[in-house]
Each structure stands twice: as C-alpha cells, then as structure tokens.
Length: 329
Ligand code: ATP
Image (tube, rainbow, N blue to C red; front, top):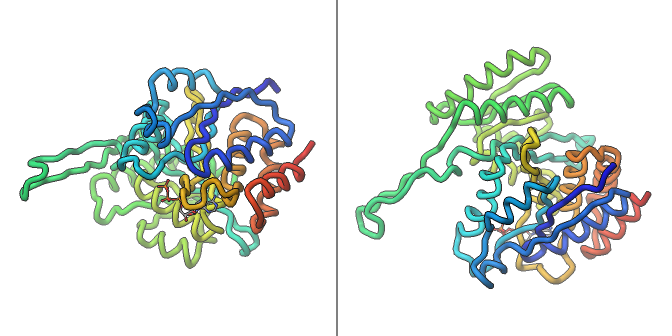
C-alpha cells in the first residue's frame, strides 16, 4: 500500500509523549507513513497567539488523516483552544461522526461503541449575551439540530451495527427536549426501517448513565447527540478501564476531508514530562486511524496487542516499546 500522509499534532503536556509511542507502534506494525508535524495547542497560543490558521487547515486537506495527542495548557482562557482549534477542525472539515469504542474488563470482554453527532447540538455556538455584566444579564445557548445532521449520524450507527451485533440504542431526553428529541426520535425510526435486521432500543440519557454503570452489556452501538455523547463517553471511559485506555475518532466517513484520531484524555499537565502517561489510548486511536486508512491487518494486530495488555504498568516508553515488540513484523 502507498505511504499514508499523516498530519501529526502532538499538542501539549502528555500529548507528544503518547503520540510518539503511537507512531512507534504503527511503524513497528510495518505501516509506511509520511508525517508532517504541526506545532499547535495551548503552548503555541501562549507563545505567539496562533490557534489554527486557515492555511494549516488547507494543508490538512492534502493529508489522509490527522493524529492528535492533546491540546490545552494552564493559563489559556477557557474556550480558546476548544472552540478555536478542536471545534473549528470538526466544523470546517465536517467531521460529523465521533466514534468511541469501549471494551469492558471482565464480562468476557464485552465491547460497545458510542456514535456521537459531532457538529451540531449545543456545541454549534448558537446563542449570546444580553446586558452582560449587569444584574439583568441573560445568556442563551441554543441547540441546533438538523434532520441531515441527525440522519447521517444515525445511519452511520445502523451501518456499523450491521458489522457487529445488529443492535442500536438511541440515547436522548425526548420527554423534556420535546423539539430536538422529537426530531431525533422520528429520524431514528425512519432510518430503522431501512435496516430491518437491526434491533433498536431507546434510553433516556439519565437512565443510560445508570445502565452504563450497572448493565453495560445491554449495549452494542449507541447513537446520541453532541452534548449527551460528550458526557456518556467520559462515563464509558470510566466504566471500561479508565481514561488512559479510551480512544476516539472524529470522522468524515465520506472521505471528503481527512478524519482525526485522538485519545479521549487531555494534556494532563499534572503528569506531563515524567514519562508516566499511559500511551494505550493514543495507540488504540492510531489503530482506528489505520483501520480507516485500509490497513486492516495492522489495525487488528495493534488493537489485539493493546487489549491483551490493558493492565500494563510501567513508563510511557516501556509500554510503547513492549507493544511495538508485540506487533513487530
Ligand atoms: P483537559 O481539559 O485537557 O481534558 P484535564 O486535566 O481536565 O484536561 P486530563 O488531561 O484528561 O483532563 O486529566 C485528567 C486526569 O487523568 C489527570 O489526573 C491526569 O493525570 C489523568 N490522565 C489523563 N490521561 C492520562 C494518561 N494517558 N495516563 C495516565 N493518567 C492520565
């Protein structure tokens, strides 16, 4: 297979440390890559005010994928990096699927996947202030839900379920969010008719929080909106072995733009620079990237090696070296 052109954003804190291990394991699995490194994130912003220039976005469009560690640093005002880099990337490249797999320890290795709509909802930036900094201040933050946005996320979830255990659960809050919930539920029921072999279920998101802890075996594929997905996937990480293991893909399944692969965790400034971070989430995210790029054998080998070593202890580089050795061709 031709070399894959990958844009690499190590980012801040432990980001570059864990991405270095991911790249090490990808190389050990025999996958050829051409890497372009980008210095972006909180430290770069504090240094010269740069967040995500349009020229960089344009260059990324010439890459096959983006591999990101973590961005965010103490001292950066809230929202600068989240809105200016991560959300800008998702919106501009239209990375409308956020896919997060979870593997439960024990339970015969039951696994499930959350598909989070990644471009709409309360994250769309609709809203504003009136009379800011007065006692009569008003803030609104609307939730933007389009039929197209819900439908493409839901259809992706059904297609994914067909390759797994043929079960999709919609999570929302239809009993209170009677407008957006109604649109999501009707769209879900319409798309379900196209997939007669896939079983469906519905959970209110608060009930889903209980099931995530008490009965996650009921899930195969979950589809949900942007905000609920953000929260549910953190909970998913917590019930399935911790933040050091949770991987994620921000995808444009149409391949119009490069998809972005990153561990769920942040820059963890408390442990940065100490060779202590668990690199497995970043390595598993690298495996998702390889699968998306068609390197299915290497992706499966790396995923299996990680899953067999979820309890690995040791330094960041020790775990990376051990997994590189396990997958070496
Ligand atoms: P952000 O706002 O960027 O998400 P945060 O500090 O809120 O940053 P994390 O950076 O994910 O969130 O860190 C949360 C906690 O989890 C910290 O105590 C951190 O040390 C720990 N942690 C995060 N990632 C890892 C990892 N890969 N290995 C070990 N511990 C980690």
